[in-house]
Image (cartoon, rainbow, N blue to C red):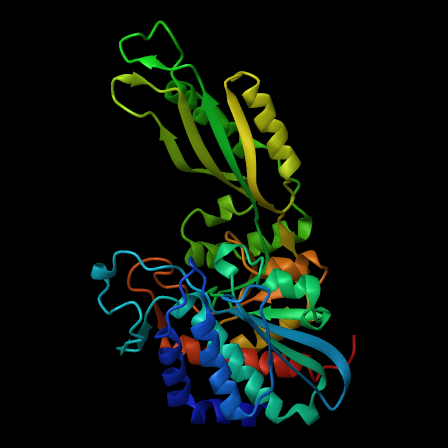
Length: 414
């Protein structure tokens, strides 16, 4: 049967590429996050294939699509997940091909969202369709979730489905976010966003004896914040082992130095504001901090260290903007082993289990106790100009998802 599945994919190669190109041509930038047109594109395709689905839209401009079928015998429940919203476009004039063109040139398909993550979402839609054809031979249930709102925390997308629709939870999740062929993600760092404000009296720029400068205080404070990155991390042994074993793949995928950043707390001063006019002593300065929490580090650790630092800065106050904890699941899970085997069969590469730097919708399933794994195309120029996906990688992702889901839904019960 797996040979038949691969034969269908090969027969559909041109159709698959045309589908992805058309999908990319439907703008779905977030912000603003209105994905109705992109979702309508998927609905029209599924309608044409005779595949039933339903739309869940807690916010009208951000619909989510859910489809499920049962196999011919009891078994496990696998969820396929992808999102339809993409980064917004800036510097459109710098793009070699227009960002909503879906241009296919020299084996590359260009456009905003080509890698993040319309290629992955298109791939799971087709994988779902192929497996539905052979559903009587499968065990358990397969569910397709195509969601909105991923680029702005997922409140009205994946989180809403996991929290309010039990049929979307499943026993395990395969997420099609970009990862590159060398990696399969089983966990990700947490996120803590903070706003720190310094307030002083302020004065005329010549009257430096009259007041402290909010910007000078903030400059000293930013330097002291580096101690947060030195906090100890209680990294679980299984996670440490996976990071060590995937050293080369991590460096290749995420850049030199990635293996040092993944198990450590990182801090980025993403925004710094202060002052009104050159000859005025600033009365207010503000920064926004993007702190990434590795597995084994907690929000409470960071806030405790920040409180210690701020004792030397009575003019400063802090506000928490957003937090989600780090999350992970078993890097030796059966689904991940199946994915590795099928990726090796299709591409000749065995993806290594890794922890990712950025966040994905997978965290909502993991935080609900459902194992979730990520494997997908290489994120070429993700979030910047000339984003593209390799056509061959996209086709291979369809193959890997289809074969892996087939193996999971035909396996003997654990």
